[in-house]
Length: 511
Image (cartoon, rainbow, N blue to C red; front, side, top):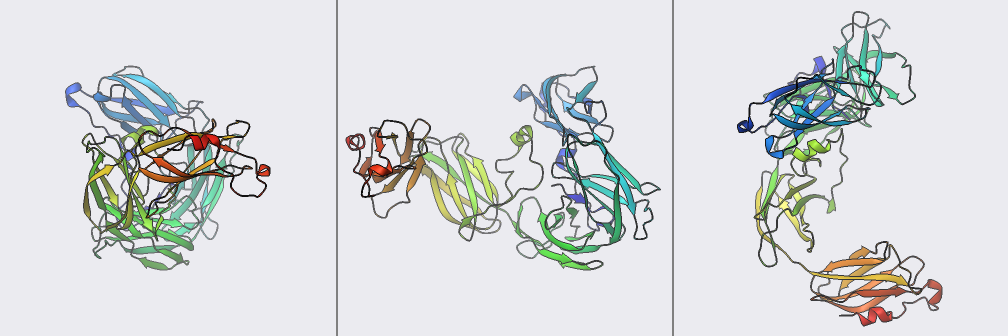
């Protein structure tokens, strides 16, 4: 899903252009004078592709960082300030194949990036209520695979056209003053040849206005406001709050909508849902809270810092993990490599950071409220801390978090014919008081399993489909225990339906 600009009817500030739309780079100026790289993106027939994303990164990671640009209506792009050397280029456009190649900079040859696929043109006419052409109407094109909306203005005959479209689903809508058309959809597939002209009929629209507030009730200027149809039509409208935090969005068709707001350093508290009727105006006040952050240090049980350990903070709603749907096109691997950890998740739901060489971590962009901290080091026991109660703008230092190594208990699961059992569930339940939650794993294709446990005594049980379960009353997780073996009998072999006694292998390997 992409977000459509409000066009002429947006009376806040115009939305800021997507960061990926402008060429950008951060370079090491001591490596030599930078140069610009200009080129063209086209389809397999040589037709220009507008709004393609071109990303470049140096083969030598110390020579610069990721640079990106967006092609113009003629398919041309400019990658600014590249240091001399070899760069890897990646080009993509919705509905076309992705191209990756290496390029020496500077290079006098013309750079042409040809993507696999043939572009199509989608057009039509904008009509008023009297079925007469409406010149000057603002027409916007979007779709679930597009990074940006595309916009054009109907000509003197009310006609419009978008060229260079790949495969996928597209949505088109027209506005003119206080009038708006319904959103029309078109699917382009491999076998699509002729695209019938669209007819966009304008009618009275509705408007949404209001102000964006923070957690203290103060106006927030510069906040992006998105108004989404319910269910989505792939063309939300967007605006930006002005210096007083006010905005107005429209015109929109009658129906149900949800209003979202975004601002750096803040997280969304609520998203008002509204119903619009033709010609009316509805006031809303979406609220944002100052984001919180959590910091600390990850250590092993001997007090040594642990590097590159993922530390996550999970927002909790009613005691359960918050699950969200992420709209829009996901970033490419090259883009994602430059993004902060956890960026892809919605602010305030799940945020992750890695500990540095000294074990320090800092997780930013957290929503106020109840949350859970999870530390997930490899080859050690995971650590959880909950609940964390975070206030708006909170900066919480959790200090040193010691992660125990635990004990690795391993073994295998077989049947009475010594055939391995894949997918058997192995459960370890603490015998201590208070009892810890059960820890479960499944056996792999070789029937092997390994389960890391805190030091202590455990009751272990195994169950597999069409086999009688088996258990061991006491397993001592300490030191380096010998492997366990569970030998399960078919259900038919268990006459009384109860648990059979532990196998000789399991009994022999108790610790």
